Amino acid sequence: MGNLRTIKKDVDFLVNEVIADCYLHLHFHAGKSDEAVEGILLEAVNLRNSLFERINSQPEKKAKQHYAAISKDLLEGVDGLFRKMSQLTK
Image (cartoon, rainbow, N blue to C red):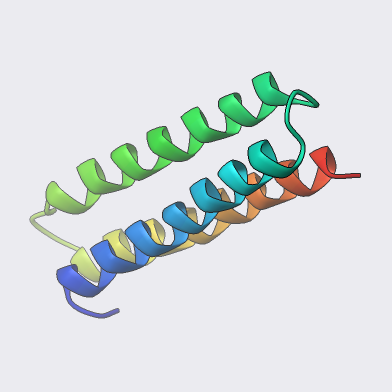
């Protein structure tokens, strides 16, 4: 586990990659699946916001486990969003 700044940067970076992928899909496949991509964008923003809320609410005890769970949820959430995007491009 790194410091909070590093965790927040990781969240921003990974979620921004999903968002960039969505916008690229919208640009290159205009009109094909716009509503589905918009749903993925909304999920990405909600994932970022929920993770930041969890990061900013520091626990009194077991901080290491708290931030490890956040990191795990980040990776699983972003992976799920990328899987949804890859299903749209097939």
